Amino acid sequence: MEKILLLNPPGDRLYQRDAYCSAVSKAHYYWPSIDLLVLSGILGLEYEIDVIDAIIEKMRPEECLQRILEGGYTAVVFLTGTASWKQDFTFLKDIKTGDQNRPLLIGNGDILLYEAEKFLSDYNFLDAILFDYTSTDILDYLKGDFGRIGSMAFRKNGKNEIYRENVRAQEYSYPVPHHHKFPLDKYLLAQGKRFPFTTAQTSFGCPFRCSFCVASTLGFKYRAVANILEELRTISSLGIKEVYLIDFTFESRRQNSLELCQKMVEEKLDLSWICSSRANTLDRELLTWMKKAGCHTILLGVESGDEKMLKTYSKGVTKDQMRDAFGLCKELGIRTLGHFIIGLPGETVETVKKTLDFSLELDCDIASFNVAVPALGTPLRETALKQGWLDESVLEFDSSGSFPVLETAQFSKRQAWEWRKKAVKKFYFRPSFIWKSATTARSLYQWKILILNGLAILKSLFLRD
Image 1 (tube, rainbow, N blue to C red):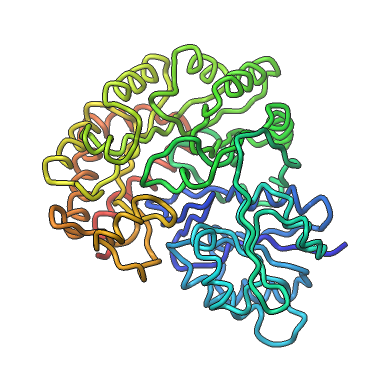
Image 2 (image 1 turned 180 degrees about the vertical axis):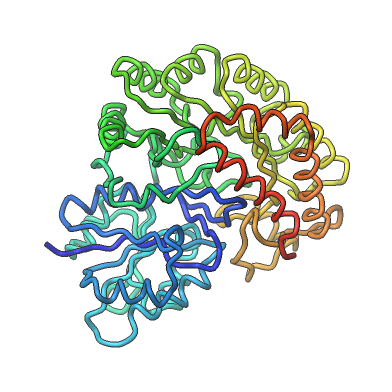
C-alpha cells in the first residue's frame, strides 16, 4: 500500500496552524490539528498514513527532513499559515531538491486558501492546495481523476488549475480520523481538565459574518450527528478522556447540538469537553444538556467592550447578551474563556479601556487578549487596504506572538501592543484571580497547566516588538 505523510512542519516557535487559522501559541498549550486529523481518516481509506507533528515533537528541521526522505511517501500533505509560511516554505523546498522521485507536496492553510495562484506560480515545488480538508477531492487528485475535483488548486500540464466550490449549508460526514497516529501524550490545553485529549469537529466554517474573522469566509456545513457519535465512541475506546470540539461555533445548528448532547448522555460516554460559542446562541436548555454531556468550558468571542465597535465589525451580539451568557455559564458551573481584540480600526484609548473593564465585569475564568490582524479574505483586510492602514505585501502576521501590523491615525501599532500588555496585567495579576485559579486546580495535570501558563503570561509581557 502506498504511504502518505501528514506533516505539521518544524518551526522555531509554537506555530498553531489549524482550521485556516494561524498564530503562535501564547502559552504552552497546543492541540492536534483538526485538518490533519480529518485528512487521516479520508486518506486512510486508500493509503497507509504516517503523521509527523514536528512542532510538538520539537524536531529539528534536518531531523524532520531525513525522516521524510527515508519514508518512501507518495505525497506529503502539510500545514502552513500566515504566522509561519516563510519558514515553512524554506523547509519544504528541501523535500523536493534532488532526484525526481520526491513526494508530491500538497498544502493546506489560510494563506494558501486565499493566495493559491501566487503560491503555485512562485513555488514550483508546490504541487497542490486544499480548499476544504473535509472533502474527498484529495483522493481524486492522487488518482489523477481531475474532472471530479471541486475544491482544490493544482498544477496540470504547466498551468495552474483552480477550482473553488462554494460550501453550502448541508450535512456531511467523513471516516473516523486516526487519532492513535498522533502524539497525544505531548499536547496540552490551557482549559484542560483531563488527559490525554484530542480534537474533533461538528461543523465546518461558520454561518455568522464577523468582518474580522476568517471563519465568515469559509461557508458553512454541519456534520451528521451519527457520524460525530461514531468518532466519539472511537475516541473513548482509545482511552482518550477529553475532547476539544474545535468548531468556530458549536451550536451553529442548535437542534443538532442538542441531539448530540442528549445522545452522549444516553450512551454514557466518559468524555469531558470544551467548545467555542456565541453569547446569542446559548440558552438554559442547551447549556444544561451540554453540562450533562461533559462540557466544562466554553470559549466565547467578546471582542470589544464598546457597542459601536461591535456593530462596526458585524459581531451581531450585544453586551447585555454577553452578560447573560457568561452569567448563565457561571450559574450552571461551566467555565468561560473570553476572547478580546485590541487595535481594530476605530479603536481609541476610550474604547480599549471599555474592553478591559468589560473583561473584569464578565468575570470570565480565562481571558485571551489578541491584537487585531487583517486576516486574508476578510472584509477587515479589504477595508484596511483601501484606507491605507496596511500594505498589501504584508502576508506574515499572527494575533498574539508578533508586533501588530494595523495602524490608524487614532490608534497606533505601538499603542495596540502596549494596551495588550496592560490588559494582561490588569486581568491576570489580580489577587482574586490568582486565588481562584489556585483553589480550583484539582489534579496534577491542572497544576502543570496552571504553572506553565503562568510562566507564559509573564514571558508574554516581554515579547519582542
